[in-house]
Image (tube, rainbow, N blue to C red; front, side, top):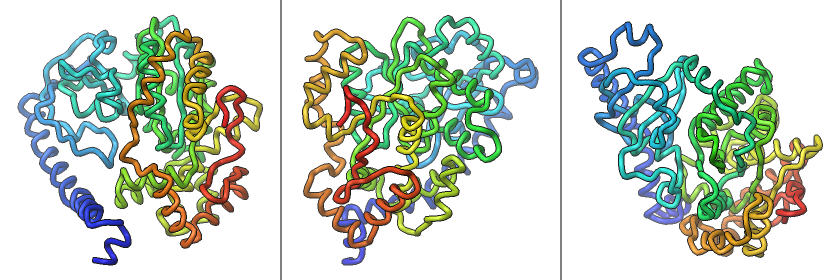
Amino acid sequence: SSGINAEYGSVKKAKQAIYDYVELLFLYPFFWIVQGLLQCMFNLLYGPTKSDIDNKRTLCYDVKINFKCHNIRENKLDLFLLKYRGTVDASVIEEEDVILYDYTPEAFIFTRIRAGVAHWDIEKHPFTVFTSHNHAVQVISIPRDVVRERLKRREVKDGSNILLLHSIGRCGSTLLANLIYRTKQFHVISEPFPLLKLCAEIGEKSNIIPMDAPENLEFIRTVFLLLCKREGERYFVKSPVVMTGVLFHLVHKALPQVKELFLHRAISASLVSFKHIMGPVRFCGAANVALQKVPFMYRKIWRKVKVSGSHERFAFMILCQMHPHYLECEAGRTIKAFSFESILQNKESFARELLSYLDLDEELLPLAMSAFCKDSQQNASFSKKQIGEYSKVLQSDKTLRWVRTVALEMFGIRLRREDLFATNVSNSSVLGV
């Protein structure tokens, strides 16, 4: 038992790790097998006709059973048991309770959220990726060609109503989204799955297809327009926190008027929080998956510096998320960057300057400041004592030294010795460190 406690810190964490393994090895395969068999039966009895599919109509399905166990894998329709309802008009995607859920090579997939769920309220439903799945009552499949034709009618296609937040994860991005939400001036979309999927696909194929290929830019534009579907509203989009660094290079080319922000934190603190909230199984698994889908240039670097430790792998993944911002700034672009540490140093000053940057009235300051009354990461092991103890563990494993060396020699990013804080990525005179 002492060995288990040394690895997971407590009996409670050891039990969680055991459950994670059982879930991964037994529960997920069981649900997939059961769902597959039941869905085949439903398709035979109630499925759409061949003419429905051949005519490329908008197909609607009722969710009869929702297998909600999708915490370590992407959104997919094989986590629903669906009964075909019929065809509907494509204008359904403009309805408030219909959210972009996923896409396939042939169609965009939307889910209708059950009545009574205010999916735009991120205080109750902080992550769109989960809300669009856990509260789905219908699944709507619309052919890509039909969607593109509808989007041609849009007048605002340049991203001028979109503010995009990039981050390294576990660095206060949920707090910032909550701050923006409380002003009631933005519709907040937090970590939508389609953004994660398209970035992973672009990164995975970057050795074959240039990342800024016209088809990639067009698809990025389409996804953002489907997420931010009301032209008269302003949108704050919080990007997923892994494998999405490519958006630094691409989103301004697809949407020339989009505004961007970058939020980061000492890497050691982010590692503490990621491992605490994910557990050791998901912590290791997420890094392994991400390293297969980051852009080819980073996969080449990983082959040169590859090590077996999960902490090193996750830290490398964070560097891949941070480095595109560094490259864009080196190329002359100015992207507002700031740290979680700088926010805590002077909360009111930060909120005031952020409102100014977003052209919002200073009268909204009390609403924005109220976000600090709720600690969105109170369970994320953020105390200085815990971070200090964790850093000692990393130091004994020589991980701190490895991360600093790789960051400087391979990425050009300077990390502070004691906590792996990046000292040369916050370039903003307004929102900087």
